[in-house]
View (cartoon, rainbow, N blue to C red):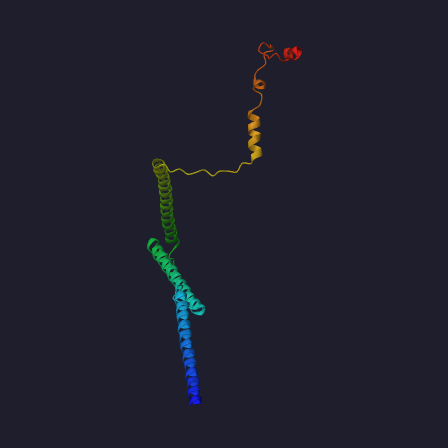
Length: 195
């Protein structure tokens, strides 16, 4: 009986150790899963947790879409420009016309070009005038608000600063006109003799 009891206790001890190990392994696995979940959540901050390959593909798609949009926009601008030119300039049909008709066509085109150049000049002058008005009004606004443009300060080295001060301290008597008389002269010579 003692042997059987010892054997049962040994088997129970082994069984408890096995259960404890399994419990520890389950806890360890749960902890690892939790850490992996936290890491995944941290990765999602950028582009939804995408890896490098997917990010590069996404960037390539975005760049391709942007390039396509730019091409479409440039094409639309070119079409608009072509349409505008066709509206403003009459078609130039020179087939089967004699010299007088060609000269008249050239003169008409020249007058059209001159009027268009006048319009360009007028618009440039209007723009320049408006820019001047904008500048003057912005200066008035800044003056009324008390906002002034601070001047850019330049660096001054100490030596040149002190040289200026030394020049200012020069003898003022040297700048006076000489009358030939020394009635206001200091009696430096008399003082030297007295000593």
